[in-house]
Image 1 (tube, helix red, strand yellow):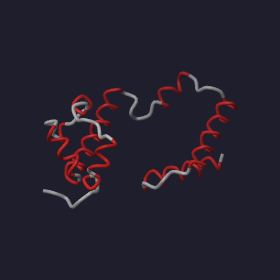
Image 2: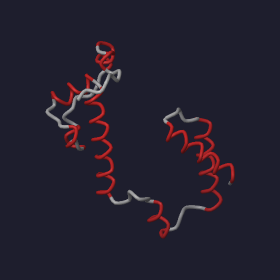
Image 3: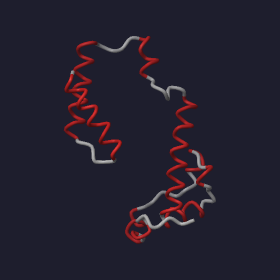
Length: 127
């Protein structure tokens, strides 16, 4: 059990720091979860509410996702010429982006990456 806690801390630090996650650590965490289920069985119905976490409500999940989407879009519009043009061409304002308007932005293709590779590198902030 102590080893599982250490693995969870390693995973959390990796996620917070933005480093690559250890596939070995992830595999061991999955094995720990499977072993826990084998020993204790499925959680009871009373535990399902706790397992849903803080984003159990669908509206809360949608709001959380859209705030992250807007934050990412604002950063891309400021720092990436490619995405600034994509947002402008789709008439999408980064501050008002939601899941539905996201569909209006064309997806990036392999050809875009090859032909415009310099446009994906973060440049200086534009005001």
